[in-house]
Amino acid sequence: MITIPPAFQRFMFELHEEEGQAWLERLPRILATCAELWGLVVEEPFSNLSFHYVTRARRRADNTPVVLKACSPTGEFRMEAATIAHYEGHGMVRLLDTFPEGEVMLLESLTPGKTLNTLTDDEQATRYAARVMRELWRPAPEQHSFPSVADWGRGFQRLRQQYGGGYGPFPPHLLDEAKRLYAELTASMAAPMLLHGDLHHDNILQAEREPWLAIDPKGLIGEPAYETGALLRNPLPNLLHRPDPGRIQERRVAILSEELGIDHARIRGWGLAQCVLSAWWSIEDTGQYPADTIACAQLLADSKV
Image (cartoon, rainbow, N blue to C red; front, side, top):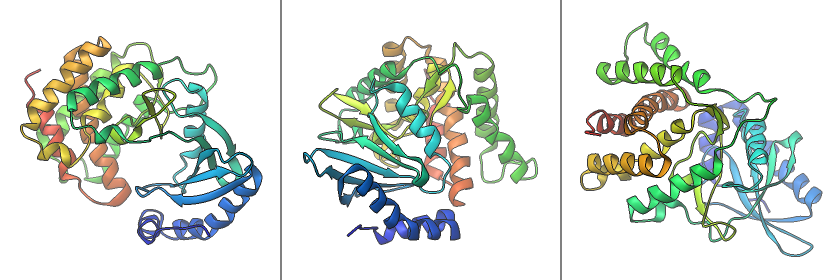
């Protein structure tokens, strides 16, 4: 019996409406097909389901644990599978197989699987994240269809169009600075790499094969410094509730600069610009204005680094 939590069902309908409902109706058949194809016993889904259905499973032949990830109608399956395959396990969970017709990935199970978010020492967590970043940086395939940092930056144009050339709910000073920084940093990028694209605390898991490995990549072509942005705007809202979150951000920027050999200002700039862009993506996806993300952008704008 395949379990689909009610909260996940509601979110899928909110996110994808009728298309999401149709996908939910197909999902049990998709998973049953994968179980037959790969000789699996499907177990309980993970408790933190968000945009996709991810569940534990075991191989019938030898009881080996694996993970099934069935992608909802976001259009992300092809890029994510290609990104994971390209890394070949270096800093990243391994891709064992795919079922393209159902947009499902069969993935290595990471044990114990605790996220970087479970660490209480933020400086230690930041250093671990930086080491995963170094493992992930590698040239993109010669032939590819991954989006670029410039492609993602077009979100700023859509934002201004949405509000008739104005700012909508965004603080004008933050939106202006974010848009300027994104354009300047994109124009002056170092040699591009294939990046994870969303490397934050909940996408870095403790493992046995390596101390920490990444999951859930987007697949993005850009300079290594871009990768630091997702870490700087997470985890929310917890970051904002810690004592002196501005100081935490300054320490993160300093540690990332030290570990990665990237200029402080470049890391801060990408962090601020991506905070505002991420807030816009949230509005596009859910219609909700993420005040926490904008508060995080303000911390970086006020930063002394």
